[in-house]
Length: 436
Image 1 (cartoon, rainbow, N blue to C red):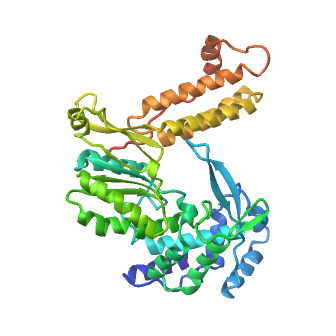
Image 2 (cartoon, rainbow, N blue to C red; image 1 turned 45 degrees about the horizontal axis):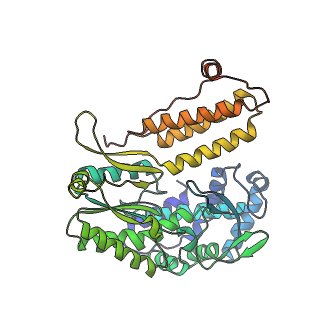
């Protein structure tokens, strides 16, 4: 760890419960140089058009000028460049904000400092964008809470446009609760107020923190730490008659309850709680569902169909049984919308690149499949992976045969000839969803 950041950590560790001070001074040539070294030079550029290599050509001069501006409080972040990417499982687009390169450096250091200050404070229920924590651990915790604790009802929740509606005033209040450095908070304020540039027009924002900003993930965690995590721990759980558990990955979260009345009360209180902090639930995606070891039996008694499923972090979770022992299991499979979205992108790529050399096409396909397997290659999901691979092979067969007016391969020649020479990578389970 860099000396300045180590100093902050030592102060935070010693001053338990006290506000963090003297943070802005840690944004200096040393920390900014380290930030520059860690930057991915292939990332998209902001409105200034400056890349990592271009900025690094005169790094010492540029950083000296940047630090001078920060000391004089003359530093002013540029507006983010607005771009849109496909939103998996939807026809909508997800807005991203691409910061200018110099701003990316400052955002990275700000995020590192905030991590030092807030990691000791964050809840065990929070898994997103934190060191040594990941989405598979969050999924594993959901399974643990349902299989081995007294969970009979689940609240599946979705925050509508969270990053676009995050309230600046509330966020600053949360930061001021833990940080006494006016200059440091002032830098964050300037980032929040910098606005975005879209179609050549600068749009000033009074709310939101652009996805793509290097500090946005931890600012989101700070916001929901106070709005949701602490409230759930200090208030909601104390009101519940039975067990209650929260699992959150940034703005995605699931809550497990022993009793239906606790789940339903939480659902109604959650709407009011979010309204207070200018957040809104996507009610069409938020629901209370019966789920757990007794759900199937209890629903059958009432003449209802098998338990509903719910989605979390790209997976669909459903009630099942162990095939050999017959005891209750929560299993997962790839979310259908996510799978269709990925296939659609691959289909479009194959269509536009079908004239590439076969070797290069299959190399690209294998890279995509390997990435898919690394994320979705979890316990119980083998069938989904095999189905996905089968569909990808079908798309490959389709577009390889449309490289010219003549059909290139029949299925036997394709499967027993081409795919033997250039094999398609097979599914593999990379992650166990069981605690060891």
